[in-house]
Length: 260
Ligand code: GLP
Image (cartoon, rainbow, N blue to C red; front, side, top):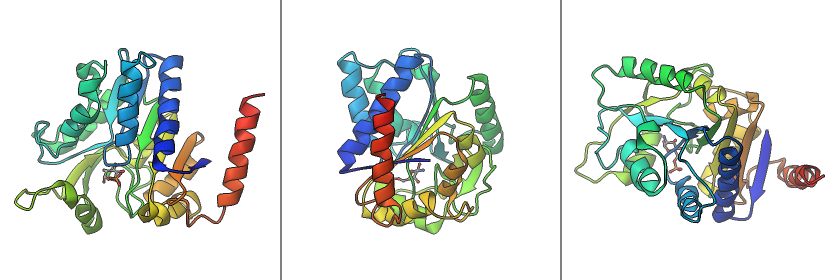
């Protein structure tokens, strides 16, 4: 696992933007795995600016989002499809027809999850998967106890996740309690994975992800099994890490060797 500790959240977004830009330059037809939540929003703003400046193009790319709420249609303001359209897709040169998010109002959610897995396989698999992390260590909506080999499926949310995400819903708005999410096995199949976390409230989850035992109790710890996983955090999210000094030193060595 490559652990990159940067001074602040803007640096984290800039680092991730460089990764995506590199990916799209090396392979314009990349299949990108995208995420929602507050963690990727600065990254998406940077992607928009770079695309408008002509330094980045999504014109041949395909994207798959991690998850969606069961019961919310794509035009619902709290749906992840709506989030992605607003935060990224409507502002860049991506072909909307090649952006995929599970359909939250599919007649049969289980069939929809199977279809989603098939679509990913048909597209050739995910080249670069973006992740945030929940305060309980979830990735996508893979809550603690999720099988480490799970595939896209319906997953019931924990009380803590419902509470954490309640800030996006109005008092009189019904907040879904179930989701469709890529599984941990689906995520681990991506050729490269990058997880972003900023802020002190993520420090415990990041410790579990990076230094904890590989365990279904902290789904993000499954990234320890991935050959090409990069965890990019700010100082606050790195605060609980025992190996922090080593990680900073190892990263300077990594960059020096890249320049050789
Ligand atoms: C939601 C999403 C996750 C995201 C997490 C953390 O539960 N399903 O993909 O990583 O929230 O969100 P935030 O970045 O807002 O802390």
